[in-house]
Image (cartoon, rainbow, N blue to C red):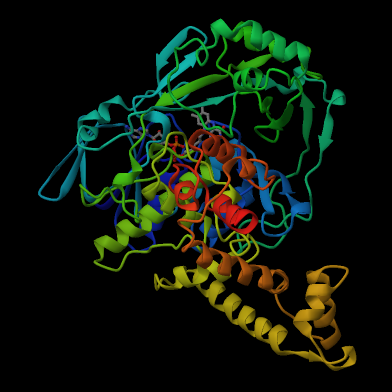
Length: 599
Ligand SMILES: Cc1cc2nc3c(=O)[nH]c(=O)nc-3n(C[C@H](O)[C@H](O)[C@H](O)COP(=O)(O)OP(=O)(O)OC[C@H]3O[C@@H](n4cnc5c(N)ncnc54)[C@H](O)[C@@H]3O)c2cc1C
């Protein structure tokens, strides 16, 4: 069978890639391993979170699937970082993992120009500009554009205690067969690693010893086509408990049995996603760490204890679990483990995620060394759209890092040398006051419009942007006579009850009706406009700061710089701003802080 675009891997990156390409009416093949559900969630079934909620909303505007699926599968919803302001505020949904995969299968299955092929790709070759993929059945499929989204499956190895097996995740084969292709694709010299905690039986836990966290009804859905706050499933609470001295002593006493600490695993994990072993050995004086107790499904027995991922032997996992309040009788359903895998060197990719040396070949998702469902989905969508645009000989879609977290991520991936898995954080973005959840349509709408598609989301974006422009210009120009001829924008910015309340009050007073999403975006943008202008000025000032001297040990004292960046600064001891800028892994937000606080 011959396709216009062929995607290998039906995870979060893969389904977005297939859908992204299919929107252009191309013939798309989606090849995925039998026995692994589409968009399955091998780690915590939660979508969104800090920096990631913004990505989900960007995917929404670009016509992706994740926001729709997450809304339909949500069982506990929350707004994170609310007290820190709208810029870094993010939505997080706990989802029912079975419903998530079912909805994904239903949606992808209903797209008539996507054919799902449940087979394993065993080898790939390219001749006369056509990729030929051999399947486990011995048959083959071909396509001029190939998108690889094989997640943690490339040369995947699973570790629990002394036990090492080949596999992409629990119960799944690895993708060793793709090495034919990978002999001509540069992978990083390092392997990456991620891990997951043991899943425990709900009925074996005592929730009365934990702090309850209810679903927050004020949380807005991810999809702008869904009603603002209607939930599709019943909502259930999550809980919080914590480790203690006994837990950490158990872990520390078994250091020699930990594959991460006895030298068996050499791969690097994400610094900001530490396993329980990392917590025990990196912070030897700290014993209390949060454990978020989260259901994997609405009605099922499986609980995900978030925060204690481990690859210690199963009996040690059982032992440390039972020291945690509420877990005294905990029964393990599936043990925790770590997975090591190969990663493509993304410096070889262009901004469309195409492998520069092999035109027509794209990579997206965890195979690119990122971590997280949202990062994977964002990349998949960009690779899918761009493969279609390339097939149609159209201009590529390049998303600017100043406009979006997807842009920040892709720019970082293709320009920065990396030595650990990549996760999105708000601190990675220079422009985080602008790239917020509330204004995703304002930021991403023009990119979507440039694709000239005519789906439901496109008509919605047109209406939204018209309303947004109208209300913005009203706020920018309206003068309130009864308030000493003050500008409405000034009144909004200084209102004691907040910008949104001020704007809502004003609209009520003149009897004007706008969509709540538009009103929120205009209110918050008005509130932030001065800060955004100042941030833009800082960014342009930074371009000329190369030889300015800095005192690096003073920089380490700033509360506004992340621990990771501080560690890198301490290692390199830069004496000029230019040297600081050239250190691998230094985030734009750190540069902005140094420029504004130390020069
Ligand atoms: C054990 C574990 C722990 C994790 N922990 C975290 C965490 O703490 N935090 C976090 O953010 N993320 C975590 N993740 C990562 C998260 O699962 C991924 O970021 C996300 O699923 C990546 O999506 P993806 O589409 O790139 O790959 P995946 O979701 O892994 O999908 C890959 C797909 O490719 C298919 N495939 C692979 N090889 C072939 C082949 N040869 N032929 C056909 N199909 C193939 C597979 O069947 C699968 O459907 C973890 C993953 C694992 C496995």
